[in-house]
Image (cartoon, rainbow, N blue to C red):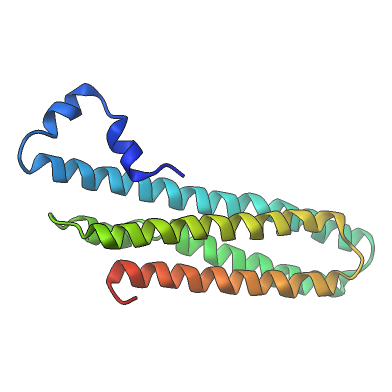
Length: 169
């Protein structure tokens, strides 16, 4: 995930000049933060979406092995992933109000960024575990509940992110 400061440093020379205009610098920095936030949320949603292929392969393997008892759990996990992906991807407009302020609390932004790094780690752990399901048909009913708990943890972490942004942490 790109760090917001990297966005500011890798801009064309015209923007470097414009940043010297009073008031315009703050506008550009808000835009860079929006860009970073949008990229990060897109990555999270895309990574979770890609992991569902492993769940689809797992469901097919269960059906092929006539082990259909775990299929409802697979559907439940798929639905929970879809809901989480929707929350992450659909959050774009909800956070623009925070960035519209002329003066942005850097401490809050640092907390959000640190929290986002932990979200990336959690999404990667969950996605890797979901993708690994395809190789495991034995004991399928026991494999899904821990993944559902990971989704619960991710949903709570996303709630925490929203609370930080609202100042409710």
